[in-house]
Amino acid sequence: MQEIQLLEARRQWYAAYIDGNVGLLDHIESDDFVLISEVGLLGKLDQLGSIAEAVAGDKWFARGSRAQDDILKLMPFGELVSIYGQGRVVGDARARPSLFFSELWQKLDGQWRVLSLHFTRVATQLP
Image (tube, rainbow, N blue to C red; front, side, top):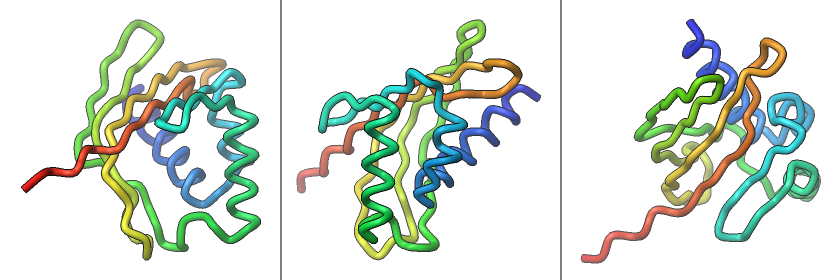
């Protein structure tokens, strides 16, 4: 049951991200959420601001885009759950790279909240 609730919260979080819904992202992400990527470290407010700018400038994902997991693993650690794997965004006109990701989730006040996301591009296979 807990896993189903967590996976539903995660699905809503990714849908909000791709839709550029900063209000729902703000609700699902913890106050001290951090995003780690090749660009560096971004706190929640910087992340939400950059998404809002991209959406306003019509430089965000195309309508109909969605997140797709190719590999998904859950590892519970008491009140925390680590989710990791490989995934990508599909349905967008732009070719999107496959990504390795790691997320940390915690149930706070009866709701699943994401504490952190770390992602990196999958290296291109050499011939």
